[in-house]
Image (cartoon, rainbow, N blue to C red; front, top):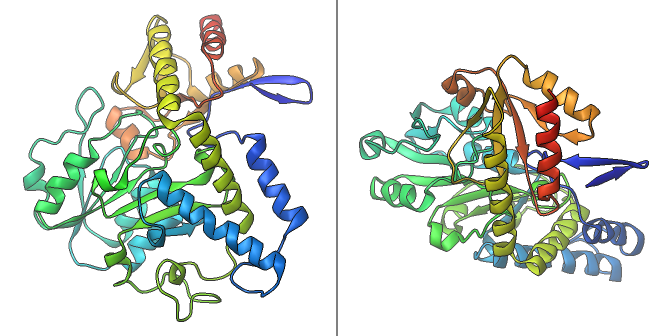
Length: 364
């Protein structure tokens, strides 16, 4: 429940951005009030404290996804992380992506390379039929971990195994996965993994690119400027003053997620999603897109009602949802629709939120 000036709101748009716990807000304010200084620069108390906390978050993130801290690169968001790889990793070859990709994992590759597209089946799952053939001539597979429209949880480890066998590397867009389910980089086996802080209870303007160190050492910096001259990875990819307060806030978000327990979060969201699927499926003329087994994301349409009109009506009832193509136009074209309504959940949502949504949809 989101409260603003006495008006209670039901927030069902966490796939776009998540709400922030008080602990995260307090961590950012604490930086501003008590030790504002640049990192890696000053030999005085505040700068050293800021640097210690900033670098400490790198350690937290690494532990959170089971990676090495010197492989964690701070970026602005998932989009910048993907663009960093697209502009610095130059091995020739085609790029294999799926039709369900967010524009952030589609447009950077479309601009630079020939694309091979993986389709979906009628259930909204990736169609891996003939994958070995599709991998011929492919140097990189760029795939989403969890679809931001269908909620589909893709079999990343299986794709990685086949891609590596064919000599291709794998980049995973984990924006809709990290903070919702356990992500283990070593078990996935991929070569690049990207995600955003603001979708995992952290501040906006900070993201993470995990890159295998052996690959990072072979690449040139993406941006040139202060702080990266003569530096090794990861700092050679972090030119200029970073979003210090954002990184520190992200560290507080990781602490919060760890305290709750990522497995408990996943079970909570899974139960909510199953409940919502059951309730929505009983509404007349409502079509749900995607598989039964999914992340905490549901896209749907009601015949005769434009998603924007639906979202506007729900807003008047105090319910925030998403409407549009969700930066996934190729997928919507594949589904034969121009737009959809989308609800998405996080730890602060309850079954009562869904009951209120269903009541309003029935009124429509």
